[in-house]
Length: 597
Image (cartoon, rainbow, N blue to C red; front, side, top):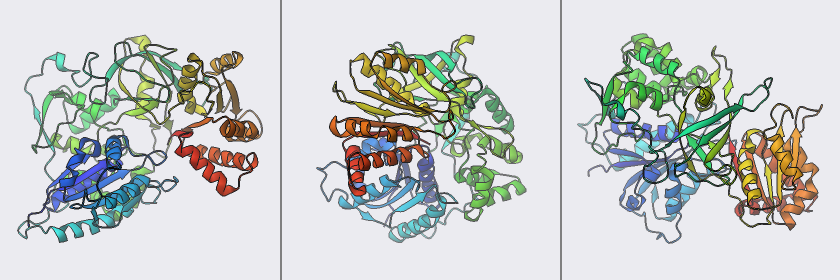
């Protein structure tokens, strides 16, 4: 029997699920199995009925939501009119990636596994639930599960004896070849990877809008520990429109210094141009890269050299290393037994790909350019809540950006790629353009005129609520209640004057929690409890919607606990009934959250 092509479909938000899916593809090829690896939303889902062997790799995001690149698939697979025998010819396996500190741990993978069984598919083995909280990371659970998977697959579809497994020390062929050009192409093609304003349809990831940056202003006090920026873009003639709750995605670049350092270490000429050629006929070229492309463009705009490398990076680097000592260390870091060492070397101190290559100079200098796209992931866009309304700021889009910087045991402070890049841009020194596009966010506001909204947004979590308040006030909607928290009134009270002006006009009820201005720290959850009777009145008698945005670490749990206590104390509900009441609010979209790690 001829072995069928294995299909690996992934839903990935941060790149981890994609990395695992690509690992599956490599392991299949080493076992001489044909394999395609695709994002779920780039796959023609109607063809699933003809697929004999599929592995789904899915992350869970936010409060149990599917990643953006599988949302269309998710809607399709849960259609009520799909026959229960739709997938009866399919053998499948589901590998989930989640974080057990969240209530809906691996919710997407679990729900998908159940749905595939309902549609008649046969599970090759129980679901794999990878956990970020495991002391050795998700691989501790994934590794043994993959061993079982290959055993099952090869049992069902044995490979001919004369085709031995390709050992791990031997590199697989690269996905692409870089065909270097003797002459530089016409300079007009230099920015061809970035969108032009008159392209068809609204801007998107494959065709972002190059938005001129208008202002880039620090809005925290000079003595405040964090640099937070209010950034405004001009979106005239972009075709972009948005509503309160939507998000903007921004495609950042590596710094010129890091780009130069990377090219120097690998012996690359940044000005040299190449054309990318896939080795396999069904492999598309990455949509973000122009053809032809310069080495500088590839490194600065595409390769995520500032990210923390995954285990797969060390596996391939070991294969490519000509230096015995370095190769030995790389093999150790990529082995199942070396995961604690890898965690200590890379994950905990947040060491970047660029810094790792500095530690393995002989290997870095020997990396064939053809392998760059196999070795280093693509820079992913970053999402920011839109902090303005087109009704108040027509043709403008504003965001509130906390510049990420923190220390680990490494000498250099860790910096967020996108926030640091944005902070470095100064429109006062000359024109600045930023590639961006917009998509719907996780918050949707009621359109009815008299439905109250309670918005809880500590810190930069207040950004989407500024857009909502501006929009609702402009449309004459009343009942706007904002709970805002920060450290100090004079240091990080974002848009304080604006809120107070709206309060004077009777358009907003503002409740503040300045946590450091008294002996005992006061947070938004304390203010909610203090105003329990009002919160209960708004939710239970006036049909208010409740919104929460901000850091995902402790705040959502603390606010949810405050609400539960209000339901019990003010509503007289038992604990189980309070939980049922909260679940009903969530189900009817009267309790919505947008949180980030």
